[in-house]
Image (tube, rainbow, N blue to C red):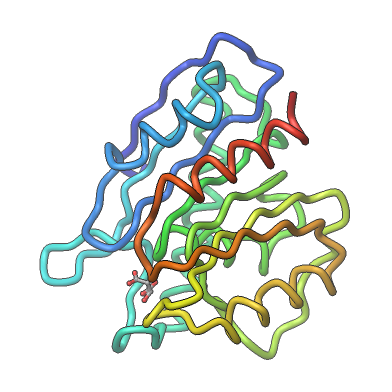
Length: 203
Ligand code: MLT
């Protein structure tokens, strides 16, 4: 099991919001985002299993922006298996999970999409990177992805955000993007944009 919080929502038709924090965060960090995006949805907020100098993450890295690919794959499988178990334990529909991730959490959410056809039904990715290169993505038809990308993000250049968009679109995901003029930080502007995108699809 991964350390987590589950909050039962008031409307079971809504997607279960899977919250995935950034480096150094924890399962409490993004609870307010879930409240903004959909206060009626159930929430499953998970803490990353890896520690980097005491900072929780979802997978190891060799340096900033350089991922430990073997660990990324291992942890992606672990998270997917955790979702299977959580769906049984909390009695929600395994096919109805929408991830909301920031930075490292957005990267593991993107990795779930890169490796599994049915891990997520959708994802809101705040400042994601390309998790892996050189693999064939599954068919992501019917999966909706929203990306918030910074035009001045020192960790993820515009080119990499465009590459991620293209890879997901080539796999037939339906992708929306919100560019923000800021850097890598999570801003209320993009959370509001994510909410608007979500409402068009899920309400
Ligand atoms: C990562 O390691 O996933 C990215 O560099 C983003 C971060 O967590 O800083």
